[in-house]
Length: 346
Figure 1 (cartoon, rainbow, N blue to C red):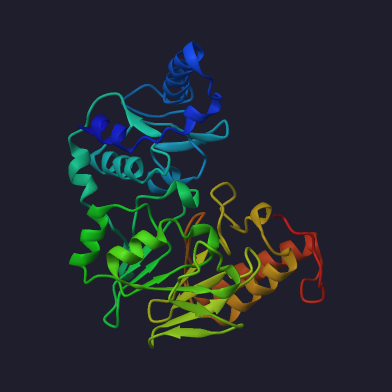
Figure 2: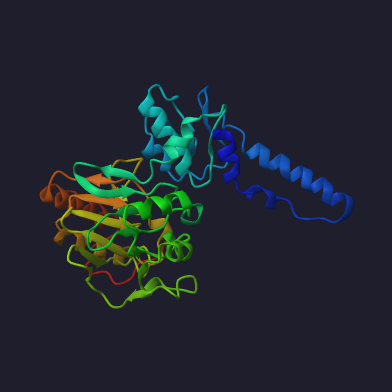
């Protein structure tokens, strides 16, 4: 069952590596393409022996490593199974990671009937006690390079933050949770299948005009200026340009949560706050100035699109951590409050 389910998700990514030819050579090329695809789907030698494994199509998005850290690790630049699941909980987390992998690179040697029930678990609560009504959607999309998306249950209208891969089973779960009123898009990199989700859920999309292009021209609500803006009484939209021109964070005030998109996150390698500067569309100095805005907000959680989530003990620890982060970057890039120009890491 598990293998059949996974095969139904496979994408012919590697079939395009060999140019087309005509006649007899075309038939040979087709056979060769299947060999390439099959080879890419073989288990990486870095995996330990056992049922679960990661194949060569891994894009190093980090999803499986934070979803099932006891099973997956980064080895030789990509994910691999470092330890086979040894308990029911580890097995469930490994299957959740398998289903959330954006490139379907996690596989099993033998079918696993448990995958059917695990498939029904999404969306996953972040922390039922500390953050009631806040969920991880799962089903990360290859179109967003595996970005994390979220679902927020709220009496004034539920919100989805960025887009998972479109799955009808997940859409039905949202229906059961009261639907989705708003689809908030933090920035242009993580829009995924926003149009398909918007049609299915009949929701209002929100995005800053600085990131609107032909793919998002029909977004219902376009934010202009520097904000802040609001969604009802509990949500504030904070303009944080730098990663992109139109990057915006969602601040859920009663829960003290900041959904940051790709603005800032915790690194899985260092365990420290970080920014993906090599993917920036704007300047480092602009993004650092945007990080300074976070000192005025009273959140204790960072829930990012890429990277690891962060939970601070309190407001003081949050600000001390951000101030230390700013100081370390200012050491590298200078005083960001006085610098007007910086090379773009596009």
